[in-house]
Length: 69
View 1 (spheres, one colour):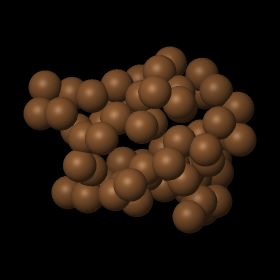
View 2 (tube, one colour):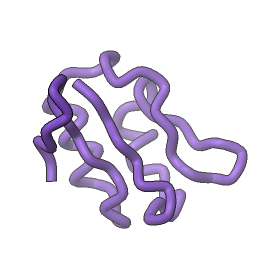
View 3 (cartoon, one colour):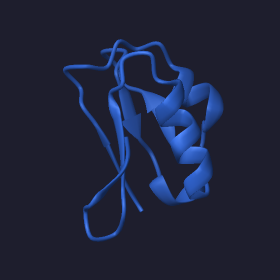
View 4 (cartoon, one colour):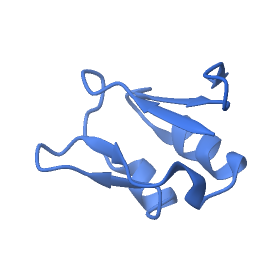
């Protein structure tokens, strides 16, 4: 499983960090970054992506195909 965060879209709301703190953190600029995409199951990654008010998170399978959104 892979995650892609579109930095230009990230508004730093940190919903992803609240939902999956082992996976996401905010960097020094207040933008989301991935710590460990394998730290939570697929469902939790999708929950975090759905909660992003900026729609900055994509969940991809191991081949790089977008699974969400």
